[in-house]
Length: 210
Image (tube, rainbow, N blue to C red; front, side, top):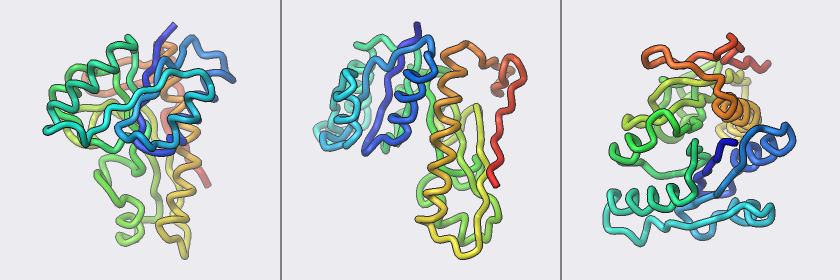
């Protein structure tokens, strides 16, 4: 039974999708805890109502990123996770922290990496005239929004789209591929080939949405 710790900063819609899929699909896993860097994160209530342990490590209480990351790691490790899942966790993590959880920490980013790392991905995709946008699940490394790609979903950019409309379409794809990616980890279905990740049985690692 794999143990999952999920980190959030807000409403945690991807966290919700993972919690629900884990229960509905009977994964050999449990969500051991949901941790936020913001005391008012809405996702904490969702987790608590389902009997999942919650914790807050408020980044504002620490003088440096290193101090915050050290306390965050201490709290995470108290739940003995096999996998750490970043689900809208809006903090840049230090190299020491990412090294601590190398190959056992996942993130989701609302673009087809390596395009549009960082913030404002939807606005930038529309401004560049992209015809396809999307979302990427990847392992976390010290380099922001890099690391081995587990799964991607491609989403069309429609005429007249603004960032809000495109974001909503991408979020629907996020809720499909993030639980799937976490399940693959839980089932030991991911294989490393150097710095690339493939599915043990050759399952498709891309989703194309019309």
